[in-house]
Length: 465
Ligand SMILES: Cc1cc2nc3c(=O)[nH]c(=O)nc-3n(C[C@H](O)[C@H](O)[C@H](O)COP(=O)(O)OP(=O)(O)OC[C@H]3O[C@@H](n4cnc5c(N)ncnc54)[C@H](O)[C@@H]3O)c2cc1C
Image 1: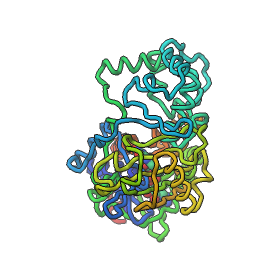
Image 2: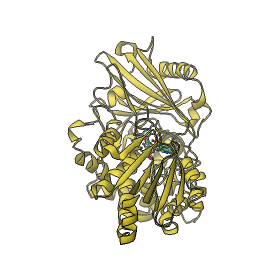
Image 3: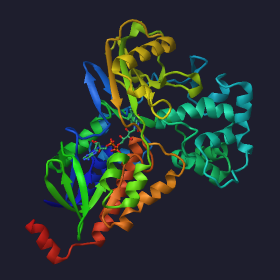
Image 4: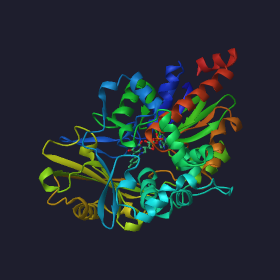
Protein backbone atom coordinates (compact mmCIF):
# COMPACT_ATOMS: atom_id res chain seq x y z
CA UNK A 1 0.00 0.00 0.00
CA UNK A 2 1.26 3.48 -0.83
CA UNK A 3 -0.16 6.72 0.52
CA UNK A 4 0.72 10.41 0.34
CA UNK A 5 1.26 10.74 4.09
CA UNK A 6 1.66 8.17 6.87
CA UNK A 7 1.11 9.55 10.36
CA UNK A 8 2.55 7.52 13.19
CA UNK A 9 0.64 7.99 16.43
CA UNK A 10 -3.09 8.60 16.74
CA UNK A 11 -3.20 10.98 19.70
CA UNK A 12 -4.71 14.47 19.32
CA UNK A 13 -1.57 15.63 17.44
CA UNK A 14 -1.57 12.83 14.87
CA UNK A 15 -5.34 12.84 14.35
CA UNK A 16 -5.54 16.63 13.95
CA UNK A 17 -2.64 16.55 11.45
CA UNK A 18 -4.38 13.79 9.48
CA UNK A 19 -7.73 15.59 9.55
CA UNK A 20 -6.15 18.77 8.16
CA UNK A 21 -4.29 16.84 5.46
CA UNK A 22 -7.36 14.80 4.47
CA UNK A 23 -9.21 18.13 4.18
CA UNK A 24 -6.62 19.16 1.58
CA UNK A 25 -7.51 16.08 -0.48
CA UNK A 26 -4.40 14.10 0.43
CA UNK A 27 -4.36 10.35 0.86
CA UNK A 28 -3.44 9.82 4.54
CA UNK A 29 -3.21 6.93 6.95
CA UNK A 30 -2.83 7.11 10.76
CA UNK A 31 -1.09 4.17 12.44
CA UNK A 32 -1.94 3.88 16.13
CA UNK A 33 -0.59 1.19 18.41
CA UNK A 34 -3.48 1.21 20.93
CA UNK A 35 -6.88 -0.33 20.22
CA UNK A 36 -8.47 3.14 20.39
CA UNK A 37 -7.12 6.36 18.93
CA UNK A 38 -6.83 9.44 21.16
CA UNK A 39 -3.53 8.96 23.00
CA UNK A 40 -3.79 10.21 26.55
CA UNK A 41 -7.12 11.99 25.94
CA UNK A 42 -9.27 9.32 27.57
CA UNK A 43 -12.66 10.05 29.16
CA UNK A 44 -14.39 7.22 31.02
CA UNK A 45 -18.02 7.15 32.13
CA UNK A 46 -18.40 5.35 35.46
CA UNK A 47 -22.15 5.34 35.98
CA UNK A 48 -23.07 9.04 36.10
CA UNK A 49 -19.47 10.04 36.92
CA UNK A 50 -17.00 11.05 34.23
CA UNK A 51 -13.30 10.49 34.84
CA UNK A 52 -10.69 12.21 32.71
CA UNK A 53 -7.62 9.96 32.68
CA UNK A 54 -5.58 12.62 30.90
CA UNK A 55 -6.53 16.14 29.83
CA UNK A 56 -9.72 17.71 31.10
CA UNK A 57 -9.72 21.18 29.54
CA UNK A 58 -9.04 22.89 26.22
CA UNK A 59 -7.90 26.50 25.98
CA UNK A 60 -10.85 28.34 24.45
CA UNK A 61 -8.57 31.06 23.07
CA UNK A 62 -7.04 28.63 20.61
CA UNK A 63 -8.32 29.57 17.17
CA UNK A 64 -7.35 26.17 15.73
CA UNK A 65 -8.99 24.15 18.55
CA UNK A 66 -12.24 26.11 18.16
CA UNK A 67 -12.00 25.87 14.39
CA UNK A 68 -11.52 22.11 14.40
CA UNK A 69 -14.49 21.72 16.80
CA UNK A 70 -16.57 23.83 14.39
CA UNK A 71 -15.49 21.88 11.31
CA UNK A 72 -16.35 18.64 13.10
CA UNK A 73 -19.72 20.18 14.06
CA UNK A 74 -19.03 19.68 17.76
CA UNK A 75 -20.02 23.13 18.99
CA UNK A 76 -23.31 21.84 20.44
CA UNK A 77 -21.26 19.29 22.43
CA UNK A 78 -18.86 21.88 23.88
CA UNK A 79 -19.33 23.02 27.48
CA UNK A 80 -17.96 26.05 29.28
CA UNK A 81 -16.69 26.12 32.86
CA UNK A 82 -19.41 25.75 35.50
CA UNK A 83 -20.73 28.80 37.40
CA UNK A 84 -19.33 27.29 40.61
CA UNK A 85 -15.73 28.18 39.61
CA UNK A 86 -15.23 31.28 41.76
CA UNK A 87 -11.78 30.95 43.31
CA UNK A 88 -8.37 29.58 42.54
CA UNK A 89 -6.88 27.62 45.40
CA UNK A 90 -3.28 27.23 46.44
CA UNK A 91 -2.01 25.28 49.42
CA UNK A 92 -0.37 27.41 52.09
CA UNK A 93 0.72 26.14 55.52
CA UNK A 94 -1.19 22.90 54.99
CA UNK A 95 -4.56 24.48 54.14
CA UNK A 96 -6.37 25.70 51.02
CA UNK A 97 -6.14 29.45 50.45
CA UNK A 98 -8.74 30.89 48.08
CA UNK A 99 -7.52 33.63 45.77
CA UNK A 100 -10.17 35.61 43.87
CA UNK A 101 -10.18 34.99 40.12
CA UNK A 102 -9.12 38.54 39.25
CA UNK A 103 -5.86 40.07 37.93
CA UNK A 104 -5.30 41.71 41.32
CA UNK A 105 -6.44 38.66 43.28
CA UNK A 106 -2.97 38.04 44.76
CA UNK A 107 -2.77 41.59 46.10
CA UNK A 108 -6.16 41.32 47.84
CA UNK A 109 -5.60 37.92 49.43
CA UNK A 110 -3.18 37.27 52.29
CA UNK A 111 -1.72 34.15 50.67
CA UNK A 112 1.50 36.11 50.12
CA UNK A 113 3.14 38.07 52.92
CA UNK A 114 2.84 41.87 52.82
CA UNK A 115 6.51 42.01 51.78
CA UNK A 116 5.81 39.52 48.97
CA UNK A 117 2.82 41.57 47.75
CA UNK A 118 4.78 44.84 47.83
CA UNK A 119 7.58 43.18 45.88
CA UNK A 120 5.06 41.92 43.32
CA UNK A 121 3.80 45.47 42.83
CA UNK A 122 7.28 46.67 41.85
CA UNK A 123 7.53 44.24 38.90
CA UNK A 124 7.04 47.06 36.38
CA UNK A 125 10.26 48.70 37.61
CA UNK A 126 12.50 45.62 37.31
CA UNK A 127 14.89 46.11 34.38
CA UNK A 128 15.09 43.66 31.47
CA UNK A 129 17.48 40.75 31.88
CA UNK A 130 20.84 41.73 30.40
CA UNK A 131 22.42 38.34 30.96
CA UNK A 132 22.26 36.34 27.74
CA UNK A 133 22.25 32.92 29.45
CA UNK A 134 18.92 31.08 29.18
CA UNK A 135 16.93 31.39 32.42
CA UNK A 136 14.84 28.80 34.21
CA UNK A 137 11.24 29.72 35.01
CA UNK A 138 12.17 30.04 38.71
CA UNK A 139 15.07 32.41 37.94
CA UNK A 140 12.90 34.53 35.66
CA UNK A 141 9.95 34.64 38.08
CA UNK A 142 12.18 35.31 41.12
CA UNK A 143 13.90 38.19 39.32
CA UNK A 144 10.69 39.78 38.03
CA UNK A 145 8.07 39.02 40.71
CA UNK A 146 10.17 38.23 43.77
CA UNK A 147 11.24 34.95 45.32
CA UNK A 148 8.06 34.45 47.36
CA UNK A 149 5.72 34.75 44.36
CA UNK A 150 8.02 32.45 42.41
CA UNK A 151 8.03 29.75 45.11
CA UNK A 152 4.37 30.01 46.16
CA UNK A 153 2.63 30.74 42.85
CA UNK A 154 4.83 29.99 39.84
CA UNK A 155 6.28 26.74 41.24
CA UNK A 156 2.81 25.13 41.69
CA UNK A 157 1.65 26.53 38.34
CA UNK A 158 4.55 24.78 36.59
CA UNK A 159 3.68 21.57 38.42
CA UNK A 160 0.09 21.96 37.18
CA UNK A 161 0.91 22.68 33.54
CA UNK A 162 4.07 20.64 32.95
CA UNK A 163 4.17 18.29 35.93
CA UNK A 164 7.58 19.91 36.09
CA UNK A 165 9.84 21.94 38.37
CA UNK A 166 10.20 25.68 37.83
CA UNK A 167 13.89 25.44 38.76
CA UNK A 168 14.51 23.03 35.82
CA UNK A 169 12.37 24.29 32.95
CA UNK A 170 13.30 27.00 30.46
CA UNK A 171 11.21 30.17 30.63
CA UNK A 172 11.72 30.79 26.91
CA UNK A 173 10.34 27.38 25.99
CA UNK A 174 7.89 26.85 28.87
CA UNK A 175 6.34 30.29 29.20
CA UNK A 176 7.06 31.91 25.82
CA UNK A 177 4.32 34.53 26.27
CA UNK A 178 5.72 35.80 29.60
CA UNK A 179 9.22 35.75 28.15
CA UNK A 180 7.97 37.67 25.10
CA UNK A 181 6.24 40.30 27.27
CA UNK A 182 9.53 41.10 29.00
CA UNK A 183 11.31 41.23 25.64
CA UNK A 184 8.69 43.53 24.10
CA UNK A 185 7.54 45.77 26.95
CA UNK A 186 10.36 45.39 29.49
CA UNK A 187 7.80 44.26 32.09
CA UNK A 188 5.09 41.64 32.41
CA UNK A 189 2.59 43.89 34.19
CA UNK A 190 3.03 46.72 31.66
CA UNK A 191 2.72 44.19 28.83
CA UNK A 192 -0.46 42.74 30.32
CA UNK A 193 -1.97 46.22 30.69
CA UNK A 194 -1.24 46.82 26.98
CA UNK A 195 -2.86 43.51 26.05
CA UNK A 196 -5.86 44.31 28.22
CA UNK A 197 -6.24 47.65 26.44
CA UNK A 198 -6.07 45.84 23.12
CA UNK A 199 -9.03 43.67 24.12
CA UNK A 200 -7.56 40.49 25.68
CA UNK A 201 -9.76 40.75 28.76
CA UNK A 202 -10.57 37.17 29.63
CA UNK A 203 -9.22 35.59 32.78
CA UNK A 204 -7.64 32.14 32.45
CA UNK A 205 -10.60 30.50 34.18
CA UNK A 206 -12.99 31.78 31.52
CA UNK A 207 -10.78 30.53 28.76
CA UNK A 208 -11.34 26.80 29.14
CA UNK A 209 -13.85 24.45 27.64
CA UNK A 210 -14.55 20.74 27.38
CA UNK A 211 -17.20 18.52 25.85
CA UNK A 212 -20.32 17.05 27.46
CA UNK A 213 -18.74 13.60 27.20
CA UNK A 214 -15.27 14.79 28.14
CA UNK A 215 -12.12 15.61 26.19
CA UNK A 216 -12.00 12.09 24.74
CA UNK A 217 -14.91 13.18 22.56
CA UNK A 218 -12.54 15.31 20.43
CA UNK A 219 -10.18 12.50 19.27
CA UNK A 220 -13.18 10.20 18.85
CA UNK A 221 -14.85 12.73 16.54
CA UNK A 222 -11.58 13.17 14.62
CA UNK A 223 -11.15 9.41 14.27
CA UNK A 224 -14.79 9.00 13.17
CA UNK A 225 -14.32 11.70 10.55
CA UNK A 226 -11.15 10.00 9.28
CA UNK A 227 -12.87 6.59 9.21
CA UNK A 228 -10.87 3.83 7.50
CA UNK A 229 -7.82 6.07 7.35
CA UNK A 230 -7.16 5.38 11.06
CA UNK A 231 -5.64 1.94 11.64
CA UNK A 232 -5.62 1.04 15.34
CA UNK A 233 -3.73 -1.81 16.97
CA UNK A 234 -0.82 -1.18 14.57
CA UNK A 235 2.61 -0.65 16.14
CA UNK A 236 5.23 0.89 13.89
CA UNK A 237 8.62 -0.76 14.41
CA UNK A 238 10.83 0.79 11.79
CA UNK A 239 10.94 3.61 9.27
CA UNK A 240 13.31 3.61 6.30
CA UNK A 241 14.08 6.30 3.77
CA UNK A 242 13.54 5.17 0.18
CA UNK A 243 14.29 6.93 -3.09
CA UNK A 244 10.94 8.73 -3.31
CA UNK A 245 9.68 8.62 0.26
CA UNK A 246 9.59 6.18 3.18
CA UNK A 247 8.81 2.58 3.92
CA UNK A 248 7.23 1.69 7.26
CA UNK A 249 7.44 -1.68 8.95
CA UNK A 250 4.78 -2.58 11.47
CA UNK A 251 4.68 -5.23 14.18
CA UNK A 252 2.18 -7.31 12.20
CA UNK A 253 4.81 -7.47 9.39
CA UNK A 254 2.74 -5.36 7.00
CA UNK A 255 4.59 -2.82 4.86
CA UNK A 256 3.47 0.64 3.94
CA UNK A 257 5.02 3.20 1.65
CA UNK A 258 4.45 6.93 1.94
CA UNK A 259 5.67 10.03 0.12
CA UNK A 260 5.86 11.87 3.46
CA UNK A 261 5.80 10.80 7.05
CA UNK A 262 4.68 12.57 10.26
CA UNK A 263 5.97 11.16 13.53
CA UNK A 264 3.32 12.11 16.13
CA UNK A 265 4.32 9.80 18.97
CA UNK A 266 5.81 10.53 22.40
CA UNK A 267 9.43 11.79 22.16
CA UNK A 268 11.07 8.53 23.34
CA UNK A 269 9.28 6.61 20.56
CA UNK A 270 10.21 9.26 17.99
CA UNK A 271 13.84 8.86 19.12
CA UNK A 272 13.75 5.09 18.46
CA UNK A 273 11.86 5.25 15.16
CA UNK A 274 14.11 7.92 13.70
CA UNK A 275 17.43 6.28 14.55
CA UNK A 276 17.99 5.12 10.96
CA UNK A 277 16.29 8.08 9.31
CA UNK A 278 17.49 11.30 10.95
CA UNK A 279 20.07 10.93 13.68
CA UNK A 280 19.72 14.61 14.68
CA UNK A 281 15.98 14.42 15.39
CA UNK A 282 16.44 11.03 17.03
CA UNK A 283 19.15 12.24 19.38
CA UNK A 284 17.30 15.48 20.16
CA UNK A 285 14.00 13.72 20.92
CA UNK A 286 15.86 11.26 23.18
CA UNK A 287 16.96 14.21 25.35
CA UNK A 288 13.37 15.10 26.27
CA UNK A 289 12.28 13.45 29.51
CA UNK A 290 8.66 12.69 30.40
CA UNK A 291 8.62 11.51 34.04
CA UNK A 292 5.74 9.27 35.16
CA UNK A 293 2.42 10.65 36.38
CA UNK A 294 -0.56 9.17 38.20
CA UNK A 295 -4.13 10.37 38.51
CA UNK A 296 -6.30 9.33 41.45
CA UNK A 297 -10.01 9.93 40.91
CA UNK A 298 -12.76 9.91 43.54
CA UNK A 299 -16.51 10.38 43.59
CA UNK A 300 -17.93 11.24 47.02
CA UNK A 301 -21.41 11.91 48.31
CA UNK A 302 -21.72 15.72 48.52
CA UNK A 303 -22.58 15.46 52.23
CA UNK A 304 -19.25 13.71 52.89
CA UNK A 305 -17.13 16.66 51.67
CA UNK A 306 -16.97 19.78 53.84
CA UNK A 307 -15.36 22.18 51.36
CA UNK A 308 -17.62 24.01 48.85
CA UNK A 309 -15.20 22.97 46.05
CA UNK A 310 -15.90 26.34 44.43
CA UNK A 311 -12.91 26.44 42.12
CA UNK A 312 -11.03 24.55 39.41
CA UNK A 313 -9.12 22.66 42.10
CA UNK A 314 -5.90 23.44 43.91
CA UNK A 315 -2.16 23.49 43.31
CA UNK A 316 0.49 22.87 45.94
CA UNK A 317 3.94 24.49 46.10
CA UNK A 318 6.79 21.97 46.46
CA UNK A 319 7.67 23.53 49.81
CA UNK A 320 4.35 22.25 51.25
CA UNK A 321 5.75 18.71 51.01
CA UNK A 322 2.43 17.18 49.99
CA UNK A 323 2.39 14.03 47.88
CA UNK A 324 -0.23 15.45 45.52
CA UNK A 325 1.05 18.26 43.33
CA UNK A 326 -2.48 19.41 42.65
CA UNK A 327 -6.08 18.48 42.21
CA UNK A 328 -9.12 19.26 40.11
CA UNK A 329 -12.68 19.64 41.38
CA UNK A 330 -14.08 17.81 38.36
CA UNK A 331 -17.78 18.12 39.17
CA UNK A 332 -17.46 21.89 39.68
CA UNK A 333 -15.44 22.45 36.50
CA UNK A 334 -17.97 21.16 34.00
CA UNK A 335 -21.58 20.00 34.11
CA UNK A 336 -22.47 16.30 33.96
CA UNK A 337 -19.34 15.03 35.74
CA UNK A 338 -21.14 13.51 38.78
CA UNK A 339 -24.67 12.60 39.94
CA UNK A 340 -26.70 15.41 41.58
CA UNK A 341 -25.99 14.38 45.18
CA UNK A 342 -22.27 13.70 44.57
CA UNK A 343 -19.02 15.51 43.79
CA UNK A 344 -15.87 14.30 42.04
CA UNK A 345 -12.22 15.24 42.32
CA UNK A 346 -8.89 14.10 40.91
CA UNK A 347 -5.44 14.26 42.51
CA UNK A 348 -2.20 14.35 40.49
CA UNK A 349 1.00 12.61 41.59
CA UNK A 350 4.53 12.37 40.27
CA UNK A 351 6.04 14.33 37.41
CA UNK A 352 9.53 15.77 37.78
CA UNK A 353 8.86 16.64 41.43
CA UNK A 354 8.42 13.07 42.63
CA UNK A 355 8.50 10.49 39.80
CA UNK A 356 8.75 7.62 42.30
CA UNK A 357 5.33 8.50 43.77
CA UNK A 358 3.62 7.95 40.41
CA UNK A 359 4.95 4.39 40.34
CA UNK A 360 3.36 3.37 43.63
CA UNK A 361 0.69 0.67 43.44
CA UNK A 362 -2.90 1.88 43.02
CA UNK A 363 -3.86 0.93 46.59
CA UNK A 364 -1.04 3.04 48.09
CA UNK A 365 -1.86 6.03 45.90
CA UNK A 366 -5.54 5.76 46.83
CA UNK A 367 -4.69 5.75 50.52
CA UNK A 368 -2.39 8.78 50.25
CA UNK A 369 -4.92 10.69 48.14
CA UNK A 370 -7.74 9.95 50.61
CA UNK A 371 -5.60 11.21 53.49
CA UNK A 372 -4.64 14.43 51.72
CA UNK A 373 -8.17 15.12 50.42
CA UNK A 374 -9.45 14.56 53.97
CA UNK A 375 -6.99 17.12 55.36
CA UNK A 376 -7.47 19.68 52.61
CA UNK A 377 -11.16 19.52 51.64
CA UNK A 378 -12.63 17.48 54.47
CA UNK A 379 -13.51 14.49 52.26
CA UNK A 380 -14.63 11.88 54.77
CA UNK A 381 -16.19 8.46 54.57
CA UNK A 382 -15.97 5.96 51.75
CA UNK A 383 -15.76 7.28 48.19
CA UNK A 384 -18.57 6.10 45.91
CA UNK A 385 -16.08 5.73 43.07
CA UNK A 386 -12.31 5.35 43.17
CA UNK A 387 -9.96 4.86 40.20
CA UNK A 388 -6.21 5.20 39.54
CA UNK A 389 -4.52 5.80 36.19
CA UNK A 390 -0.76 5.35 35.90
CA UNK A 391 1.03 7.14 33.07
CA UNK A 392 4.53 5.59 32.82
CA UNK A 393 5.49 8.57 30.61
CA UNK A 394 3.85 11.80 31.66
CA UNK A 395 4.43 15.24 30.22
CA UNK A 396 7.55 16.32 28.28
CA UNK A 397 9.92 18.55 30.22
CA UNK A 398 10.91 21.75 28.42
CA UNK A 399 14.33 22.03 30.04
CA UNK A 400 17.09 24.54 29.31
CA UNK A 401 18.04 24.24 25.62
CA UNK A 402 14.53 23.14 24.58
CA UNK A 403 14.05 25.96 22.05
CA UNK A 404 17.21 24.83 20.21
CA UNK A 405 16.03 21.22 20.35
CA UNK A 406 12.72 22.24 18.81
CA UNK A 407 14.51 24.04 15.97
CA UNK A 408 16.50 20.88 15.22
CA UNK A 409 13.32 18.79 15.09
CA UNK A 410 11.32 21.31 13.05
CA UNK A 411 14.12 21.28 10.46
CA UNK A 412 13.92 17.50 9.96
CA UNK A 413 12.34 18.07 6.54
CA UNK A 414 15.39 20.07 5.41
CA UNK A 415 17.73 17.17 6.23
CA UNK A 416 15.38 14.38 5.18
CA UNK A 417 12.80 15.67 2.67
CA UNK A 418 9.32 14.46 3.60
CA UNK A 419 10.03 13.86 7.31
CA UNK A 420 8.02 15.84 9.89
CA UNK A 421 7.64 15.68 13.67
CA UNK A 422 4.70 16.95 15.67
CA UNK A 423 3.45 16.43 19.22
CA UNK A 424 3.25 17.80 22.72
CA UNK A 425 7.03 18.15 23.10
CA UNK A 426 7.38 20.74 20.33
CA UNK A 427 5.59 23.99 21.19
CA UNK A 428 3.56 23.20 24.31
CA UNK A 429 1.86 20.24 26.00
CA UNK A 430 -1.72 21.52 26.01
CA UNK A 431 -4.35 19.99 23.76
CA UNK A 432 -4.93 23.40 22.15
CA UNK A 433 -1.24 23.88 21.33
CA UNK A 434 -1.05 20.31 19.96
CA UNK A 435 -3.98 21.15 17.64
CA UNK A 436 -2.35 24.46 16.61
CA UNK A 437 0.95 22.70 15.95
CA UNK A 438 -0.82 19.94 14.00
CA UNK A 439 -2.33 22.63 11.74
CA UNK A 440 1.14 24.05 11.04
CA UNK A 441 2.57 20.58 10.45
CA UNK A 442 -0.20 19.81 7.94
CA UNK A 443 0.56 23.02 6.01
CA UNK A 444 4.28 22.15 5.90
CA UNK A 445 3.56 18.60 4.72
CA UNK A 446 1.16 19.82 2.02
CA UNK A 447 3.72 22.41 0.82
CA UNK A 448 6.39 19.74 0.66
CA UNK A 449 4.16 17.42 -1.38
CA UNK A 450 3.14 20.26 -3.71
CA UNK A 451 6.81 20.96 -4.38
CA UNK A 452 7.56 17.28 -4.97
CA UNK A 453 4.82 16.16 -7.33
CA UNK A 454 5.66 12.60 -8.42
CA UNK A 455 6.73 12.15 -12.04
CA UNK A 456 4.47 10.21 -14.43
CA UNK A 457 6.71 7.18 -13.98
CA UNK A 458 6.44 7.36 -10.17
CA UNK A 459 2.65 7.72 -10.47
CA UNK A 460 2.56 4.55 -12.54
CA UNK A 461 4.78 2.76 -9.99
CA UNK A 462 2.52 3.97 -7.13
CA UNK A 463 -0.61 2.73 -8.91
CA UNK A 464 1.04 -0.65 -9.53
CA UNK A 465 1.97 -1.17 -5.83
C1 LIG B 1 -2.66 13.38 33.30
C2 LIG B 1 -2.63 14.42 32.21
C3 LIG B 1 -3.42 15.55 32.34
C4 LIG B 1 -3.42 16.52 31.33
N1 LIG B 1 -4.25 17.61 31.44
C5 LIG B 1 -4.36 18.49 30.40
C6 LIG B 1 -5.38 19.49 30.40
O1 LIG B 1 -6.22 19.58 31.31
N2 LIG B 1 -5.43 20.34 29.34
C7 LIG B 1 -4.58 20.24 28.28
O2 LIG B 1 -4.69 21.04 27.34
N3 LIG B 1 -3.61 19.27 28.25
C8 LIG B 1 -3.50 18.39 29.26
N4 LIG B 1 -2.58 17.37 29.21
C9 LIG B 1 -1.65 17.32 28.07
C10 LIG B 1 -2.27 16.74 26.81
O3 LIG B 1 -3.23 15.80 27.13
C11 LIG B 1 -1.22 16.04 25.95
O4 LIG B 1 -0.07 16.82 25.83
C12 LIG B 1 -1.77 15.74 24.55
O5 LIG B 1 -2.97 15.03 24.64
C13 LIG B 1 -0.71 14.94 23.79
O6 LIG B 1 -1.22 14.53 22.55
P1 LIG B 1 -0.23 13.88 21.48
O7 LIG B 1 -1.07 13.39 20.35
O8 LIG B 1 0.86 14.83 21.14
O9 LIG B 1 0.48 12.66 22.23
P2 LIG B 1 -0.15 11.31 22.78
O10 LIG B 1 -1.50 11.54 23.30
O11 LIG B 1 0.88 10.76 23.70
O12 LIG B 1 -0.26 10.40 21.48
C14 LIG B 1 0.82 9.68 20.93
C15 LIG B 1 0.24 8.43 20.30
O13 LIG B 1 1.27 7.70 19.63
C16 LIG B 1 0.98 6.33 19.78
N5 LIG B 1 2.19 5.53 19.52
C17 LIG B 1 3.32 5.49 20.27
N6 LIG B 1 4.23 4.65 19.72
C18 LIG B 1 3.67 4.16 18.58
C19 LIG B 1 4.12 3.26 17.58
N7 LIG B 1 5.34 2.70 17.62
N8 LIG B 1 3.28 2.97 16.55
C20 LIG B 1 2.04 3.53 16.48
N9 LIG B 1 1.57 4.40 17.41
C21 LIG B 1 2.37 4.73 18.44
C22 LIG B 1 0.50 6.23 21.22
O14 LIG B 1 -0.19 5.03 21.47
C23 LIG B 1 -0.35 7.48 21.34
O15 LIG B 1 -1.71 7.23 21.03
C24 LIG B 1 -2.58 16.36 30.18
C25 LIG B 1 -1.79 15.21 30.06
C26 LIG B 1 -1.82 14.24 31.05
C27 LIG B 1 -0.98 13.00 30.88
